Image (cartoon, rainbow over the protein chains, first blue to last red):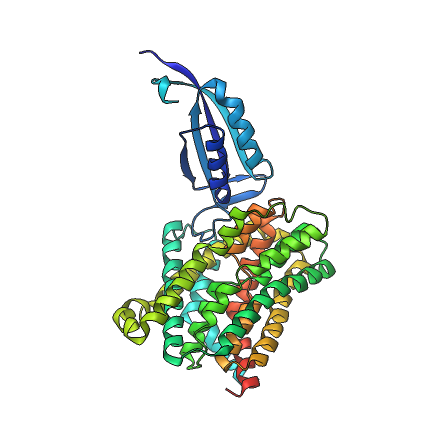
Length: 103
Length: 327
């Protein structure tokens, strides 16, 4: 099966920043992404959990997008402008996709 | 004084308070008891809808007067002014940074709707009437405190106003709690007693039971916050968490007396001024002031001031309101 190289970008960020991040991704030309709920975790700001939370203040989400390697820099520049001052993690990994025209 | 002790004792052994205590105890004991996020949100939606609807029905039954507008204005002024008092007190009593002090101050100008709901429930159980439009006053008090806090940060040379954009403004003014509270208030107002009769089996009878479950959840979250962030509560910060609601309640009392509200109305204005937000303001602070320490303001608001108001504050405010109004 023919596969094509791509970049998988995972951005774990505060739930309150989700729409700002996805808006920035769209501005950077990213047409597809997936938002995943994050149940809890621990980091420099201490442990946290979504259990029983009503406020969005202490929740996190993960935004995942897969793009062509040549579009990575523009995406990261747009995303960094949003996540710069906030709690979160940005990772970039190599991946292979089956249908290159979709990314 | 006897009245105050009696009210406090009745309050402490009520199902509402004991449910909250159970949540705190379970959390501190590291029990795996938890209420899923979606269920907690569902319970809060129910409570907001019910309290807003009942407030609207009360206004429909008793009519409106000029006091409504003045009470709304008083609420906005209190919400904008209390952060300034809280900020000055924090700078005096603690050594936390200016940024953290402003973020904490925003919480104490805004309101805790659950504290308001619990106070309403206690007033109802004691047969003390209150103005139905206090629900609208609660909604009006959510946002101005945030603007005051950002102004405090900007005044100190921080990035307070930089964090404020039109999207955040929209989120603050149209956050789900405000929309639901105000929306259900108008539905209750428009449909009146007939509307209430149609859905009373849903929003009246189960109300206290749902409130108990929600407070159980609040206890679990507060206990978890205390377990994880309790170390941040230095004596000065802890004292602020108890002193500030008392100071806020005095401001609320003064405004309510000037407006000539009923005993219940005075008590609710005191509760609103004494309570600290834990839903709308923390979310706004995460967007506008991300460098401020969330453990500090969440632990203070939910782990100190909320339990204080729930157990001792509300009985105190109700007793004072009844004494000063003769109600």
